[in-house]
Image 1 (cartoon, rainbow, N blue to C red):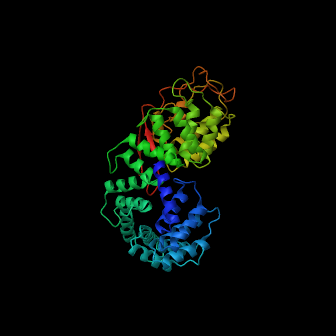
Image 2: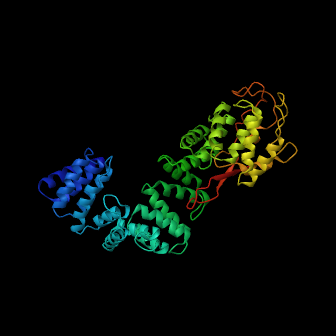
Image 3: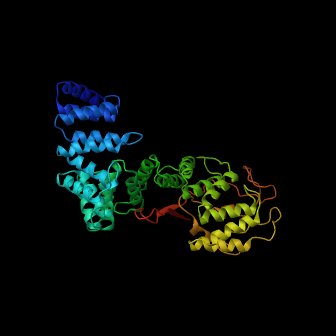
Length: 452
């Protein structure tokens, strides 16, 4: 491909010198993308101007868009270029100028003017114009809001290979808005948009594959889509990828890689990743084989981060750590505060355990090696806990931490000296677990759940 670009650049240079406008336009694109030549936006814009003056009106549209790539976008200059494009009959220029009027960048905002320009651009076959018409009807910009009409425009633009419209067409078919409900068509549109690089579309395609929604269930393909979105920085995709690696579902099991992705998503403040990372430290995960090193201080840190964002599961686990003095100074009052917060959770299972934990906190710190109560109370069925395990943690959390306190595991215990010994790391932890996705991610991105 590089050789083809090099050859194209040489031919365009010769034709540009001979005064051929199409060559100036083609060479401008290569300079703008850095294909076959060193990227040079200034040279690209000079060549677009040359092509525009040679009668290629779209060149003014493309050249004007380069002003958006500056550190401080110059919308006023872009407007001048777009107006020249419109004067030359460029449908793309009409869509670009319409966007300025729709957003109020470089001009006084005028939604009706924007709609008029989008409509004219769409009439002339501009995919961007069709997409913008869809946005206008969807949001009610310059026209009465009409979601079915918006979907018709999105689908028209999608058939003209507009990536943003392809994603929106997926929503239309998934929800049956303006068209008959068709999840298979929805998946195909999301996949096309994902192939064009749209990160949200990649996540949506992955979720549908994982669920077998609109397409055959295929965890291995879902993992590939999650990884593509994760590499673009999507925290939800990072966490889903980590969950699949922790499970060995659709990909070779690797706790080391799972913890890596949980860590990256946790750094972005994504709560399910924070709890997943905390459980890894809590249970000494992170190696592909052999015993991992438990780090209760780090576990407590990440449970605290999630608890501060009102995650009930994290509040329960952090409360246990304060009650037992694992990774933090033993503090029964702090434990009760966390249990009380969990008791107010909208999740009935979390709320139930929060109330039970609160009631069971002793009046004073128990002596070392006091038998550890089960999650749902020593005389109760601890299976009540399984319903509160959240996406990717694949963990029994407090349940595993509250198993019978026996001998020292030999792993790092950063808790207080007077606390009960945490349990030994289980190398089979999380391997026999399957995930399902509670919501496909369009109206809200709900985490997966892991049921043992």
